[in-house]
Image: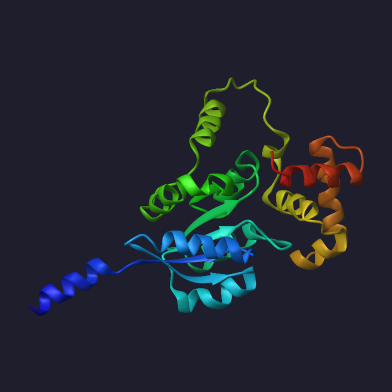
Length: 225
């Protein structure tokens, strides 16, 4: 009899999920939607990277859903930190920004999938279950883009963003979020000269003539398409 009760309890256990998004309505809506599922429990929420890191150990989620833009912070940094500290934690990046720009970067720093918010209603369960199963989630369109790239002739012209280093892309992202050189230096714990050197390299690789053009390019990368 006890064994049957134990088996029933195990069947009723829900997979714990943490949501990190700086919009309370987004967190509330996601919690309401996921908690309707018999096997899922959005059990903890955070509005910033700092808050997420403070609660993740006690929350002990199997999956963290993370917005990559957190009120001036980079969710990519949070994903990178969580991947390093909690290697078994599944990480799903979610964003309003175009996946053609950010999906590969999110995967590169440790995410298991990337979901655009405008597609979340139809695909969130698919993305969550796929990532929890140990698979990578990308939209069908993104899979198509990656396939086209693999099948493209070697002489094809790659996107200039593809040639950036992780640090250069991180700085480009921070520029797009409105950070200046000194603020970026403080955030990344680097000297101003180092950040200026990275900015010069970005202008060269992206074939931009001025710092203003670089900032405009960075902002454009963050805009909805």
